[in-house]
Image (cartoon, rainbow, N blue to C red):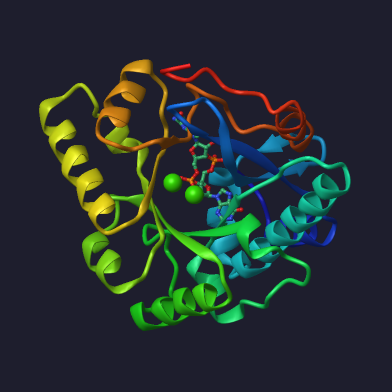
Length: 253
Ligand code: C2E
Ligand code: CA
Ligand code: CA
């Protein structure tokens, strides 16, 4: 996509970014257990742009800390709005790039139990291992729960899992899409067993089919995110399903 640095920088200044929410669902009951915050760029004259198209540009220009901060600001604002309207909002997971580590500033008014942070090792962040560990410790000391995103896709996933006290493991959708294949299922079964033994909460990403729901539930993984339940929703639509206390179709309704 042709795009110049000043334009994306202006987009931050002009508050052209917004956040969509993808529900996380308890597959056993169909109840909504929270959401992941996913950024979108409402580019003037072009419509909604997905992060895959603009994050590389922001990374190239060292602007990821500013984006993460902007997303956090929007999520906190939406959280306040939900609270005023008496709507359950969270817990909402916010993605943090490693770039953010050195710049993290606590946001006022955030409720610890309503916010979680997702950290991935697959981004091109520059943060070293020690820096990341210190950052994770800091977030946990502040009372936030942290999730390891895209589990299984990095080059040192197990080492990271060993060194950083993650509370939540997000199984990458690559492995979920392998359900139905013997090898893929073996890897998933043992990963879920390991995460459970480590006392971690597990969230399966990219759940699209009922057969995946059944397999995951059998293995003891209850939480999922994916098109089977819901695509990411605009704030208004997310508020609306939370307001109605709507259940999404569960495998065992
Ligand atoms: P991610 O953190 O792994 O987020 C999940 C992505 O998978 C989202 O794409 C979501 O729309 C998509 N997805 C959800 N369910 C399904 C499904 O059932 N099937 C398939 N095929 N895809 C599904 P999205 O919104 O385009 O975000 C892409 C990536 O951009 C995210 O991957 C994350 O790494 C990054 N990102 C998004 N928002 C933020 C943000 O606010 N800050 C940072 N630092 N990164 C962000
Ligand atoms: Ca994520
Ligand atoms: Ca992910």
